[in-house]
Each structure stands twice: as C-alpha cells, then as structure tokens.
Image 1: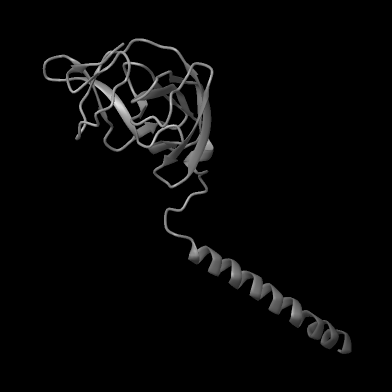
Image 2: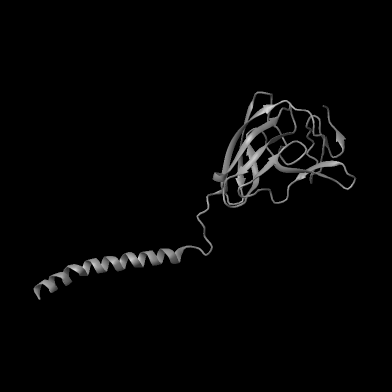
Length: 192
C-alpha cells in the first residue's frame, strides 16, 4: 500500500500541470476572433514585375507593371506613395459618354485576385503621380510604397523610361493644373 500512496502523491503535480495546460489551451482557443485565419498580410503576398515610370520634366507621370498576388485571398491596393510626387492616385482609363478615353481615380482601389495578377499599363490601370517634386529622367529609379486594405504595405523600385503615348484626358474632382507630356487634362492638350 505504501507503493500506491507514493505513486498517488507523485502524480498529483503531474495531474495539476496537465489540467493547467488544458485550461490554457482552451482559453487561447476562446480568445481567437470568429472567422480568424492565418492568411499572410496582402503586402507580403503581392509583388510588382516589369515595373517602370514614365519620364517627365514636371507635372504628372505614371507608374506601370504587373501586380501578382501569390496569396490565397484577394488583395486590394488602396493607395500608393513616393518621395517623387506629393500626390498620387490609383487610376483607370475608361471611355466616357462620347467614347473619348479618360483617366479617373479608381473607386475602392486595385483588386489583385488571389493567385492572379493585375496589369498596370499605359491606356489602362496605372499609378498616377500628380505633382512631381523634380524631373524624372530616363535611367532614374523611383521607389513606391503600396498600402493594402488590411493595412499592410509593400515597397518596390522601378526604373524611369522615355515613353510617348496613351493620350487620355484626366477627369478628376479638381483641375490640378498639372500636365503630363502627351496627355490631355480636362480636355486641354498639353505639350508633347
């Protein structure tokens, strides 16, 4: 009987420790928000390939490339920033009521589908630099930070290239008084 009493005495701390571990695991599970997933932040899942920026002396420019989402959930780019410009917008190019191609800010941002991509290209979706700080010359590099709907960010650097084309109008809420070579703004031709 002494053997049983010693075993029973020695097992009490082990049983108590086991109960504490089980209780802590149960509480941890209770603290997780409903619907929580282990998804990676969008900024860690989205990359930019073949990025480039249009050379410009002043006013406006634009950034292009292919956004690819390697994640399992859609990622939404809601804004962009760079030291090269004081104001940036996410733009799409669409036909207006007269069939003229116009640029406008995208409502809700760029959705990059899970396992898919979204092209940013002249005459289509692009990141618009609205107020250049200094000229962007071919061969320069511009670093951007993209911010996603989940608050995460991703940084990329793109070379500046000469380009003439994509003659669209800009239809924004305000006339920013800025020009982009080869583009029109609010129906007024710019030099280019």
